[in-house]
Length: 410
Figure 1 (cartoon, rainbow, N blue to C red):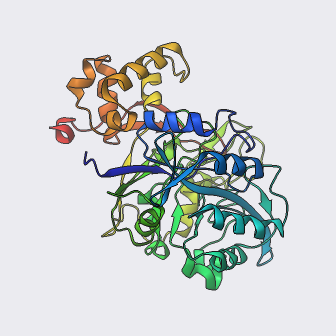
Figure 2: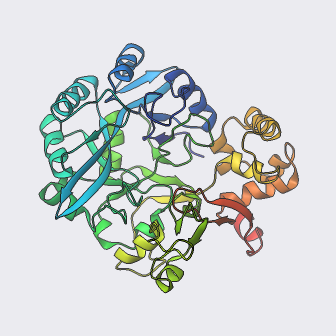
């Protein structure tokens, strides 16, 4: 793969965010990002005072980007907005990227007028997305506001439970400042291409990681062709799609909200079945949590399989730990999985290289032939997932019955 390609995961959290690992610190993140094959990380949580203090102490600004331990960092935060609009309560999460600490301080000064920032890495505020866009643009036109995990039922801009039906409905006259959305684990670009109102919007993918280990960090990411890594080039690439090569996506069925369902009732179904049962859980009789696939079909104005021109491509791959664990009792944290993973990293450098580039015959020198075959099938999207629903991750179960792999790998 071209040496000018850089991989960026621009959405993660710190140890100061709820339900996050205490290992979400710069030392561990920079180390694990290299193992994954990432070149750029979001800092996570620049709104939290203690984490921001640590970022200011440790990050060094060099040629338009922040650095720590030979890893590049973009100043990044996620905020939760809960407010009423059009007689409906909205719960929307937004990703914010900023070019430097001076701008971050101004963002936090504005947020301090709206509420507290010190109780969680992802703080909650009661003002609208329209006001957010307006106020951020007053601070700096280089700030990026990106609706996070756009289709998540509870907190996505298009979510079934509290979202909007379009960007225009959410941001109104400030929609012109929105250049991108984050697809989230439960959708991929192919699904988003079915909505014509997203034609001018760049689709990005990030991990939203709560722990720093490679089966979480970089599980979704963005690939740019970039000789000089700096904030300006990252923003320009997202806004214009120039030098934006592709996104790394998990199979959308792997995400926690792909199908409709009820977690407590251990029930899930596809949109067709959901329509047949009128979205009522057959076990408890309550309304199902309507998943991403159903919501996309509700808003889509194009048929499934539509492919637009001149947009970044995507590669659908599961994390390497998932592939290895499939053959060894499904435990991501077992010693066996850890040992095999480390052997592969030692031989081939980083996980993205293994997932995207290393030939099967080379893999077979290190791992069982069936594992090597599965890595290659994963590379070409030829794996099968039991879809996730209502907060339950999807599960890799078996290979799909497909044409000979010779068609794909020669």
